[in-house]
Length: 492
Ligand code: GLC
Image (cartoon, helix red, strand yellow):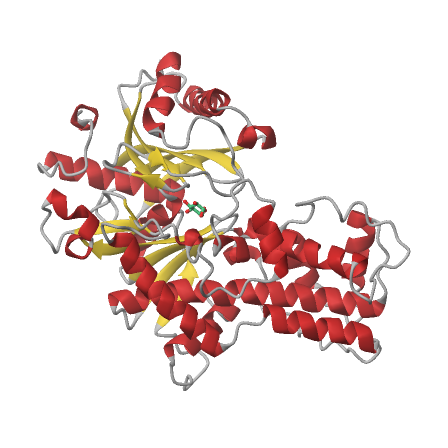
């Protein structure tokens, strides 16, 4: 994708000429804290490869490496009408997807519902009731006159879940700031089904999936070179296709060793034991003040939910504690509010095209009531670049680790999520880091593809969920009942 799209405006040169010495020193300190050099990237990647294998072992490790019971890539010939429900981090989305008789083609209708903020820390019943209401509304508005028999649904539940079956999933722990009592440690499918049954909606859950698995399968539907699916959004994670023979923790199932099994890595949990990631004091505060301290160490340095918070914590520290005292004499109460800046704020800072950073100045004025001097604006810009660059470079370690583990010398990686799609330079910075980690020779011409390209994915939680439902129905029909809890739901 790098290099495609509308031509970018010429980049800003920027000048630090009027930045006083003490502020310059702070910038230097931040550069040291947030820069991850090539050697460190390689060290992280090597550790990552070991941790991927550990997650697949019987003893397990900190990366969950969840088998998903999605057991094949699509061929492009899948057909049928499916519902998809996506419970991500920010929105709830309901879709109806028609996989048409044209190869790799689909039609989709969808409705989006905002996830009310209070639901994320509310109680479980309210969550399931809200979800069921949205589904019911969708069915009523799109199928008001039709008597429906049974609709097969793919439910994208983008949190770590242990799946003994594809129509089952025990929530391991909430991530992405969710904190709803009574769900962790329980199978979410019956909770969901109970709320649906109350409303008499004719829906059968066919597959519970993760957004990354959906992304992998949806992308492979239109591009057979796709081998890894990634989300760089509110959270950060990836899925890829493993062979059952390389999953010791599934050995008791006696599946043929070359049978494929999509693995939802849940790599956000990489290095929870803090062995290799170069965490800064700010990352430590983000973790400590989160609803699940000690969890999602990797995700907390990369994902959209946290980038703005890291940035905010640095600025507050530079105001309160360091000799430079940025924003001196000003009221920074708005900036003191946790999670007041999201990653789109950082994107805007990085996108400011003006030499004098006037757009950044306006942002600070309008959103935070802070008047920043020009030297302070230069520091702000550099800080945003450092945080954004670190996130992109660290994510490349995960991609490189999977590619190395699977010995993929060339492939495509399908990526989705707000950070990947909207954060300036994220793709290009990730591509540079991949090149460093994998020691690719310089390109002969700029148009040449990289051996491993991270590309914009197809819609995983819509089309991907429908495809996984279709693939599961097909294999059940063929008699492959591995990882199916309720075969009766798959008939008819
Ligand atoms: C978090 C979730 C994971 C999801 C990712 C992206 O890491 O735990 O399941 O795939 O966010 O949404």
